[in-house]
Length: 317
Image (cartoon, rainbow, N blue to C red):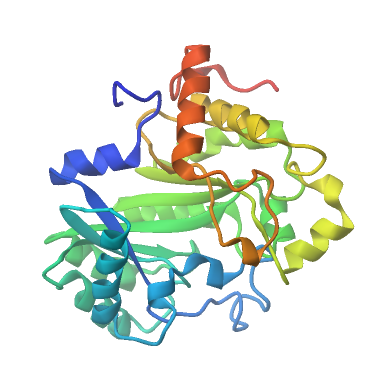
């Protein structure tokens, strides 16, 4: 763990691994989702608005190579210089396609001279031995990781948000991917309906048991024109972020999450940011990630807390 922060930061881990600053480049390969086209379900997850996950440079129908070039320009224009770039297939379910076509897409990205690795975002129910064969093969030459959208460790929650898979599916997919020597991360949403503070912190033990390399947490964002917006309007008391839940409350909750999180798991994200025009409700007042990080670090230092210092003590609420 970095001496300057009380939790293991993903950026620090990647810098050590590559020997310089690493920047992820979000890429949209135009993939759909089995929870929208009928294979698993229709309508998608109740919280999902895919537009919110795609940077402006990859919303047009342009080639993957052109997206990479625009992504580098996008980050340089914002002062984010990097020594290494990783292509990040973020939007959509990026293993939900014929294996030969997937191989072609992955190859185009990872063979680009500016690219040092590939991260594939997908669902736990959209992985197969054939796709893992491809990812394992690519990982022999460059960095490869899979990021699973797990969202919750509770089956009741996954069913309520129309996720289309259970937590056991995530457990199995993570284990299969790890067995191939490919790094694995997972994404979780804090504050899904029906989950209270105690549920969220107690669930960290199940996250630890997955054996992840990195993890993302972020607060629930309620997007306009989604099923989640309608549910929130109808039953606001089912949401932890209703009824005056403030930034300080979220910082305290994240502090507890981190104190129960395995210190070997790198933390990539703790806050979600989205364009205001897409949001129906955002509980944290539009705070920026760097400001949030500073406040969180200060809060943990004030407590003398570090990642994992309560991991073996369980959670009693």
